[in-house]
Length: 336
Ligand code: X2X
Image 1 (cartoon, rainbow, N blue to C red):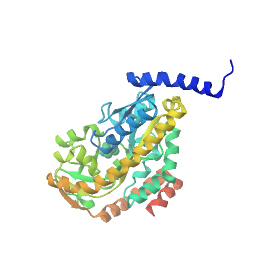
Image 2: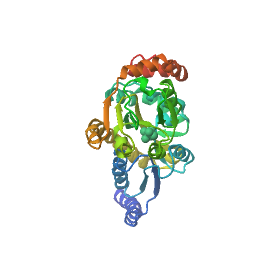
Image 3: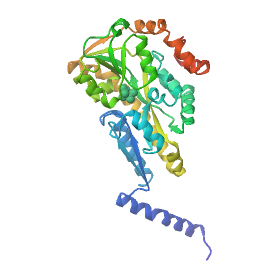
C-alpha cells in the first residue's frame, strides 16, 4: 500500500488524538508535575499560578497536570529548595536571596536601596543583571524561567514601635528570611536579626519571639500579619522577587513541545503577577489602615547612610566581585 499525504496525516492524527482525548476525559495526565511555594492561596502568585496550570492543561490537551502546593504545604523554603534539587518537586518559586545559600550571586538583586522604582527593577531583571543570575543558577543544576515573579519592595512592621530612622532599628528583634544578605543588612543596622522561614513567621510574631519583620504589603495583607503587628513603616529598603525554578533533569525529560507550552504560560503568568502585586502594594495601605495598622513614612536617607557607614556596600561588593557589582550599578547607580 502506498501512503498518500492524506492517509499519513489521518494515521498520525488518529494515533496521537485518541489516547490524548481519553486521557483528558479520565483526568489521567501523561506528566504529573508538582509546583510548590511559600505564599497563601490568595496572593497573586497562587491566583496566577492556578490560571497558568489550567492554560497548560488545555494547551497540552491534558498531557500535563501541574499540581500546586501553596502555603509551604510541602515544607519550609529551606526544605523545598532541597526537594527541587533532588527532584521531589519539579517547580518551586524562591527569593533570590534565599537561593543564595546555594547560588551566592543570586542575592545581588536584594542589595539595600539598589533599585529606585519598578521600572529599574524590570529593566535589570529582564536585562543583563537577570541573565547573569540565571546563568549562575544554571550552574547549580536548576533552571530559572526567563521572567522573575514579583515579591515587591519591602516594608518593616513591628508590634512595639514605628521605625522612623535607622536609629530605631538598634537592638530591634526582627525576623529575616534565611539568607546571609538579610542577616548582614540588619546587623549593619545594629538590629538583632533572627533567621526564620516564612511558614513560622506568624507564630514567631504572635508569641513575641521577635518584635518585627519585613515584607511587601501584598504579603503582610494576604498572610494576615497585621493581626499580630501594629505598626508598618514604609521603608522600601529593598526589592525582592521569586525565581520560578525547575529541577533541570525533570525539565529536560519533558518533550520539547510540552516545554515550549509550559515556558510560555509560566512567563506570561509571571508578568500578570507582577502587575497584580504592584497594584496591591500601591493600594493596600488604605485597607490595612482601616484594619487598625498604623503607617508611617520612614526616612530612607538615614537607612542608606547607615549602611554605607557600616561598610555594608563595600563588604558585599567584595563578595560578589567587581564584574557583578558593576553590572548591578549599571541599573542602581553608584552604591559603593
Ligand atoms: O520569607 C519571606 O519573607 C518572603 C515570603 O518574603 C520570601 O519568600 C522571601
